[in-house]
Amino acid sequence: MKVLLVGVGGVGEAIAAIAKPRAWLEQMVLADYNFERAKFVQKKLGSPKRFPAEQIDANDRAAISALASKYDVDLIMNAVDPQFNEAIFDAAFDAGKNYMDMAMTLSSPHPKKPHEKTGVKLGDYQFERARAWERQGILALVGMGVEPGLSDVFARYAADYLFDEIDEIGVRDGANLVVRGYAFAPTFSIWTTIEECLNPPVIWEKGRGWYTTAPFSEPERFEFPDGIGAVECVNVEHEEVLLAPRYLKCKRVTFKYGLGDEFIAYLKMLHALGLDNKEKIRVKGVEVAPRDVVAACLPNPATLGDKMSGKTCAGTFVTGIKDGKKRAVYIYQTADNKTCMKKIGSQAVVAQTAFNPVIAMELLHEKIWQGVGVHGPEAFDAVPFMKRMRGYGFPYKIREQ
Image 1: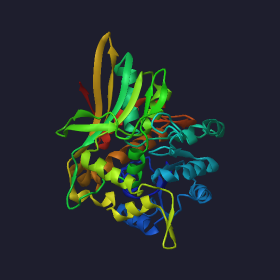
Image 2: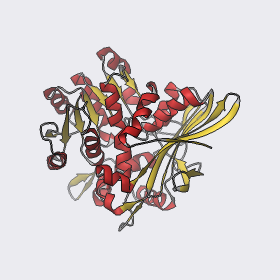
Image 3: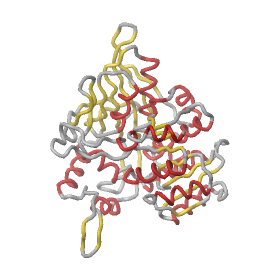
Image 4: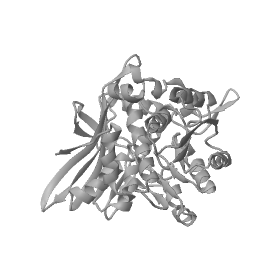
């Protein structure tokens, strides 16, 4: 398989490092706006012909399409912030190439009732173009990171093998990670974190469809495994809620994130000051987006690995009926920062995200996962994916509640 990797930040670098030992990977083009960053990752990988470096603007649809054609890639892998999704998604269509991302195209709140009704939903832009992708005979696999991605694979597995009827699919994410030396240091892209945490969360219910609530609503304490313990989780906008109901029969879908009071307070402060704004404003003759300024002021999450300790857990909590009895299971994957740093040189949150698109690449290459159009991970058999997880050093577990 030949891949054009757009974005070689923390997750992009981890994707390349995880894919490097795999025989199915013929070539992976390392493309980034920061050419020096692409060259730096190329040097770390130590194989310039297999990992050529290129400079690219992720907002330049024509340039991305041309680069994909230049290297005759099989897949365009989107590993940048979701603000660039539309351009990369459209570039893949123009080039007639398969596409994968780890977060879907962005939402826009309802103009009058943002905490009751949905406006433009996550992924609407992509799913509205599904028929065109079908006619083109190419596949866009959207939301194939950890959450969304692995969590959706777990949901499909639960629906196929663990339940006869599902009441709720509830993704629950929590961690006990600590970053030494910083008062505030997000372990993932602050741009994406602001987007998903401050937008109105979406919930889906059978008979009602998708609706929204206020940010950080419906707090609950969830007991996370592997020593993490109880963490308060709150509603957050996330792709699983937009994906699972398209494919799986259930009564309710939610996503709750264990943010913690201190983290929520920082996010609320950014919002109160208008620093979460992604639209550019003029400051002393220069146009700049406040959110980009915040991101520039904070440490790069990819550089925090040697200052971090603890674990992060991503999983899908499913309740329902099996053989006439009530059942509740949590299917999850826990990533330990020390282990991730030792194995691939990436911190836990970055590594946990990066494993999943690489496994998906292998399944696409082997034609085990096949399709055309626009699809989420629930569209494909979960078993081949989950069977490969341990071989990647990325095992899952199932806990009966």
